[in-house]
Image (cartoon, rainbow, N blue to C red; front, side):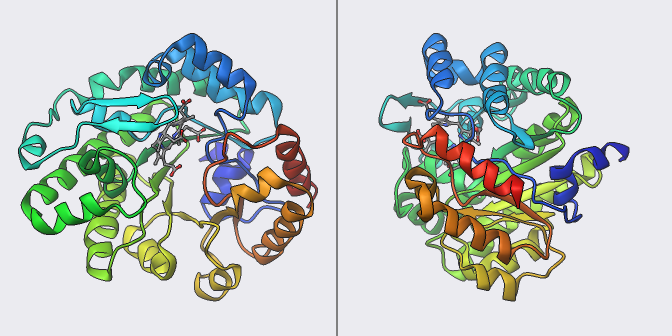
Length: 344
Ligand code: CP3
């Protein structure tokens, strides 16, 4: 791993605290950037953007041309997996993703075999990114964790309480387990292929790790994430993984121990002193500025940035938001944020 020394963000994931925290921004390529909106317009649809390596590479690199960030994150979406499994997925402007919800028969009908072929253009984008990026930049690959992806596959769209998916898991345990198996296996293949194409680290986006009792948290979140990490490392020894169990609250430590992720993403609702008092000093953490503070800027942003830097100063820390950047974010505020973190 001789390249590690040149990549501060990867080194931090691997447990080496840096003099100042490296940083990236969740959803750093996106609608707050005019150049993204322009490329998105040329691509036509959102999935067309994801499956065209020229466009995907272009939008991945756009934030790095503007900002002094330590990582590029592959431009894609967590919902390319259901699409690759043959489920109908579309992105309607202003509405977010819309899928044809699965019933137990629909789970049986998923087409596992061709998923990686379908995702070949995404892997081609990873190869080109590896070649295009300077050696000190970490290339982050990702997929959605199975439960989060399943909430969209079963509910058909985003929802604040994941009611449909939670009900399905309890009412149709066999079909649910089958769906988790398919997502675990496909995710392992997909992430292993991302590493082979040149990713340095991957992030598991478990964006809906909330609203689950402890039994369901273990079954829906911990066990599938654990199986992915284990299966991935059989193929890619020591594969570096960041887990982001958003909303996991008191379950963060259990999640981290059970899954074996190298680093854990902390959402913005998690108290800083909870992290300090509960998570071991050796565990790399990523986060956790509220994206709304970046929208508002000024003291609302700056005071909290200082609190976060201070709270995590004695452990490996990757500075990030506690969830994705939103389209309303002024670019000047992003510039200021980076200046604050880089000057710390
Ligand atoms: O971080 C990056 O820059 C990489 C690209 C990326 C996107 N989505 C691009 C995107 C990543 C890592 C994601 C992850 C993702 N996608 C998650 C997990 C992270 C999270 O925010 O919780 C989830 C739940 C999704 C599913 C998804 N995709 C939703 C709910 C939406 C609609 C809401 C929204 O923000 O528009 C998308 C669309 C999407 N994915 C956009 C982008 C840039 C906007 C689509 C557009 O350009 O019209």
